[in-house]
Length: 250
Image (cartoon, rainbow, N blue to C red; front, side):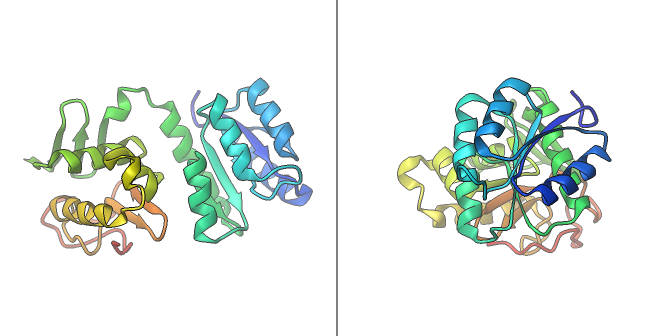
């Protein structure tokens, strides 16, 4: 499967929204399977083997978060939430349940298509491919546990490397604070967000030209962090002070 050949499952109860999304997706040459309820969407996910699921949270028969949880019991298919719910708690709940990305309505079709392509590229990579990450001057080899910035090897502590490697394997996608805390420090520390702030700060000081204006380690306010997967706009030299992203660290 390539991003061009993908089959997308659209779970959306509103006919007008579903029609608009179908036309948008078909224009990109993606195949589209439609479902107007959570139950029908789960049935299609099990029988049609889609490459990606686009899911509305406000379904008539069951909440979208419940659909994500049910999907995760049988499949690792990427799930993109499209919802009018813009509260941080809704985003966190969806992502913690197993969704891969969250886009709030209203949205631009260009951003929707870019999010879909990013998710499809992620699933198209081989397992080995996810062990090697490069974005501009930053190169991370999870197998050899080496990190380079341009030609310079960067020393990371074990915890710093563990944190970075999780972000590498989810490159381009938001990873929630709770997920990072659980995977790095264990379930008992799922609420200790200050751990995360301290270590993300240390990583930025080692990897970013300007830690206050990060290009690689981006903050999703109130939700988590995202490792930028696209080429930075600014000069890739590690001593450059320019920045292609204005996201403020937290």
